[in-house]
Length: 478
Ligand code: GLU
Image 1 (tube, rainbow, N blue to C red):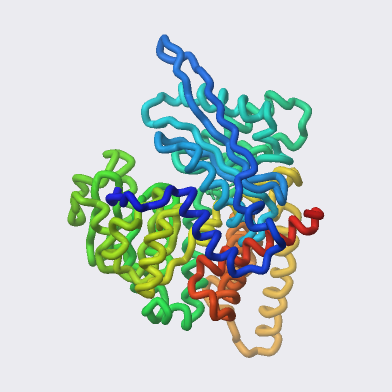
Image 2 (image 1 turned 135 degrees about the vertical axis):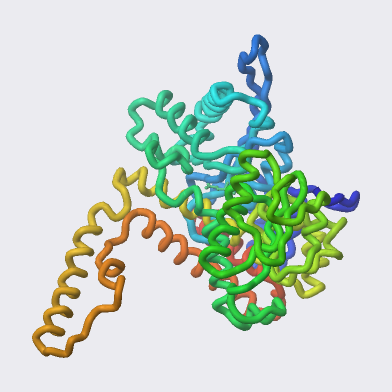
């Protein structure tokens, strides 16, 4: 990680500073600013699990930032860096994120102070079930009140254990599956959830590049085609974003930064091959088809068109912001740019697509999963074949017209197959996500472009989110 500066505020303070900047530009009822900013509650749990002949004590948290809408929502992180400050900052970001993309939740976040790589699968299962038990018995896991999801260090497997643990404790709750999202499809999950955050980053960039004026503000031009991208962190989010952008939008991944160094190649890196290498070797070192840079964080400062920090918070900070030259940064991680770095980058004219928007794809598809669980039916099940038969009618009619009129018109190759196929769950999830990312960008952009006192997308995003949270509080009579 890049060196941090002693003047750097904590993550929680950084989020609050950014919130304060925006809140000062909104006409709020007296006291409302404080009410929104504070975290409503943070529960700390310490529990013991018997492992390898001894009792090991673990510390976990679940923080609820705002209950202006319920359930509250946010992932559970497994990392040695987890602490109350971090969990609260992340819970606050969840509130603003959900408001911005209009998913009807308040913000929450959880964390367990653990290095998951130190444990065997069955040990992790016991630890996870025990943590879930502690949270569920306090309604901190509950389909109507608090719905966790994956975050750093957790995934489908952990979510399946949590769902099962909750179901065991609530045997007659018909909505038990909706107590957590990010489950594997065979355990009540939804297609497209694993790729969702990375896919959302791609949709966010696609939407940004639909606005030439915004692209020009970043000093860029044209489309995503050929854009040179550096990605920091090839975990779930970074991997999917890099994969989709390079395979589908013609962008070039010229740098990948990981824990043990970075790989660079102006000709474009092979994301799939590198991801496979990381999974088998635990890092990027030794990968033959690119140049290896031992000082990974220094690659954040390399020349590129788009920088995608997709790992930890605070990686662009007072210690390196002056040297980061990317004209466009999209925050796939939560809080990768500190408040101080944000100011430096803004002054330099760098456009930052903020975390609360950029990585909202995960919680958006979580919302679809929750709705699916509550409706007990998969998306598209009722409509798909009906849609296909109506399309068939048109194709038959076109073919008949061509024949009867003797024009000899034929449908273009592949059209029939593509047109006839009704949308399944994955297509519907992607369509809903794309629509959400477009709509949220436009809401944010309207504020950015229409107000002289708003000069960056982050402040605009906060303003949209704050106004929506205020409307909910007002409707509740606060
Ligand atoms: N942990 C993810 C986030 O930070 C997903 C949260 C969710 O799906 O509820 O947005």
